Length: 154
Image (cartoon, rainbow, N blue to C red):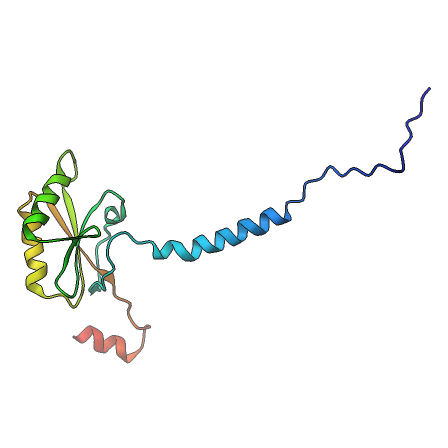
């Protein structure tokens, strides 16, 4: 009968050290958590606030058609600056071969009314079935505060 003997000179470790990999993954997770909210499609505008806005979850989809109006009077289709006639033609081109003919309008709260109304008219003349006006949820002061009652009286 043979007896297995252990050689004193060989030290093999067969475990995997995953600590460095976990550290790298946590750093990447934190970086993505910080950057993801900043990656909004389209142009940044300070949208008007509303007390009871309707949920328009389709506006956040990558294939949604979003027209934005800046405070300086510029109109954007996605991230491209457009004028009235060009806006109508480009929206008409994007609506071909689509089942949903909805366009969303995001306007800066300090934009001039005639600029936004002109963009809405141009979008409507492209053959849009539905038009969504995007706003942000207004935050109300805490219950019981006098500011809340003053705001509701306006």
